[in-house]
Image (cartoon, rainbow, N blue to C red; front, side, top):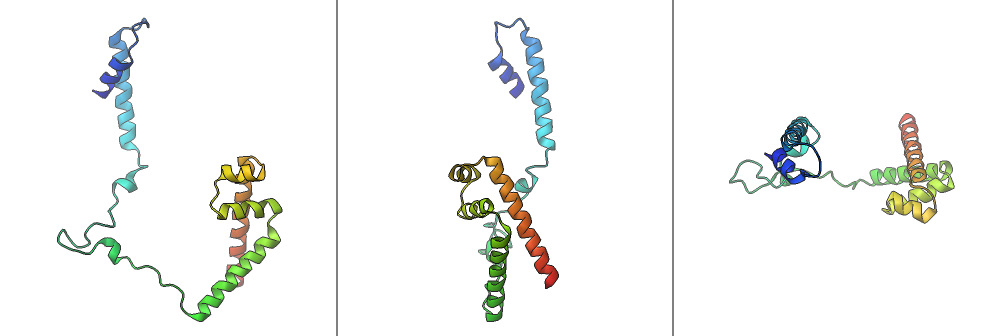
Length: 152
């Protein structure tokens, strides 16, 4: 029916195509589009997900699923806090040594929440060069983490 409606809506009397042929084509294409959309798995996680606000154990239960999810505890152990601070400092040192001036500026702006376009405008570069710089930064951070894991 949607295909027929679109055929009626879009039919042009100025064209020499008969309405029947145009309508058949519109209907066939609409059917194919519907089949392709139904077979797509792209939105399956969204369609099969469960709300965190849903009752955890049934309709009459007052607790939600979100109430049952425990957040990870914050580091309160002084030793963990020191180790965490040392890891952050080691990452900063590594980035100061290994990042180029452009990469450092891009990283600072990216951490501030700027988009690729905003960073490109601020630095006077193309968006693609900003993307390339961020990819290099990610590789360097990944390399640092791998080296740290090997040492530990």
